[in-house]
Amino acid sequence: YSLEYLAISVSQRMALKRMLNFNVPHIKNSTGEPVWKVLIYDRFGQDIISPLLSVKELRDMGITLHLLLHSDRDPIPDVPAVYFVMPTEENIDRMCQDLRNQLYESYYLNFISAISRSKLEDIANAALAASAVTQVAKVFDQYLNFITLEDDMFVLCNQNKELVSYRAINRPDITDTEMETVMDTIVDSLFCFFVTLGAVPIIRCSRGTAAEMVAVKLDKKLRENLRDARNSLFTGDTLGAGQFSFQRPLLVLVDRNIDLATPLHHTWTYQALVHDVLDFHLNRVNLEESSGVENSPAGARPKRKNKKSYDLTPVDKFWQKHKGSPFPEVAESVQQELESYRAQEDEVKRLKSIMGLEGEDEGAISMLSDNTAKLTSAVSSLPELLEKKRLIDLHTNVATAVLEHIKARKLDVYFEYEEKIMSKTTLDKSLLDIISDPDAGTPEDKMRLFLIYYISTQQAPSEADLEQYKKALTDAGCNLNPLQYIKQWKAFTKMASAPASYGSTTTKPMGLLSRVMNTGSQFVMEGVKNLVLKQQNLPVTRILDNLMEMKSNPAIVFVVGGGNYIEYQNLVDYIKGKQGKHILYGCSELFNATQFIKQLSQLGQK
Image (cartoon, rainbow, N blue to C red; front, side, top):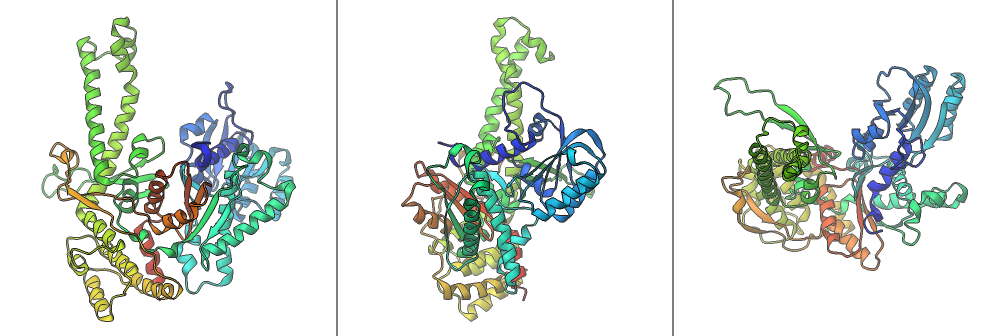
């Protein structure tokens, strides 16, 4: 099980394909046409399917239409419908209404998470009343209530994420019943994750935290399921061909509170930067294209900004290769790709012109005799070249947008300075200077920097110093609510334990940028430091490291209270150096620093 061993995306895709195939395994090479059908999902279902299956793949599976459950849908009486929805009151009411209105030929009802007995009875009664019992072909619990973003990364939910957010778990006024609900929601999704993975984990957690509450509840739920041997979800054919029969994965449940600095940290790797500074959500980035300001006549109204969205997916080779690379390296690679593409493009043009075929279509060219084998190969590689060009354009746009933020906000300075704070290195300039520098970053950047300092420092600043910092932050336009919360948090954790340490030195600047960043480059990187990363284990990675020394089991690190791409990348880099070890990273929600600060700010408004 070299690579497939722990790829959750493989398991979840298989499960979805089986569902779209009316819950019989999907056979690749069957020549028959697929059965045409419609797919009806709610927002939850949409979020689960969209990172894993493209519209083209859905079409190949026979899905002609995919519609939201709560949209106005016309009857299509001769087509089967596959539903993929959460078992909520309103969803079930709407499904019953569909039955009454006889919208489709037959109904395959798939619930993302297990449906209760009483709700099943509601559907049965509606089917009876609508005399549609024979049309309801199958009802399935799919146990797919989580979202896979990468082969080795998943998040619990996107729709109602405020229910399980850091703020929800850490509200001072939360009641026991509310806390139970939050924990049950998290456990339900984690249970689905393990059912889909086909494995029963060995659970480890940090004591006295929300993570421990999740561990206890999950353990109980797994045991109850295993005890009921006849209906257990972990036996026989469900266990992905017994891939885990000999090794149970290790589930490491970590509480967000063991490290609040990393989610606020300015970062330097591509994927984490995209998530930090752009609108990046379920593997799709939305960009506002600034449509050329330079060439508009003076005093003209600025042009409307175009919104463009790009999918950054596992199919994108450039993304897969560079999403964990430091940004200057990414800019350099985009530039190289562009140059190599131009060379190939010219080659095709040159061959065409030698043969007097500029205007000809490719079909005519391919019919020429074999002395044109060279040209034919150039032509057959055209679609490939066009795809390559699409990816180059995509990354040129995305990287340029990131670069604009780095330059405008001096993010390289922030990144380097925070790394020094977190690794307890001597600081070369004072924190107050950066906070007071009107050119360095947004008020939020300054707040993030100060919070990291406040969280990481062993010796909290004296009241007088703190007042001075607060004044500088207020003058810079910062909202001080997050600091209120972090102050209480720090006082509380101090009683509980020693602060997390972040290890030693991290970055070594390598002079200002290299050859590729010369004038010919798309990316004018003057003044941006070329910082190179040294592998530095973050607290979450170090916890895993301690647990993994003894065992070679694959591990799943799950952060209760929210995770981020910085931590994910850190784990990925860590595991690269370990032969034959596999890990997955999961979190209750995925937030960037802006979203996290907002939650801290709400917690601090007391």
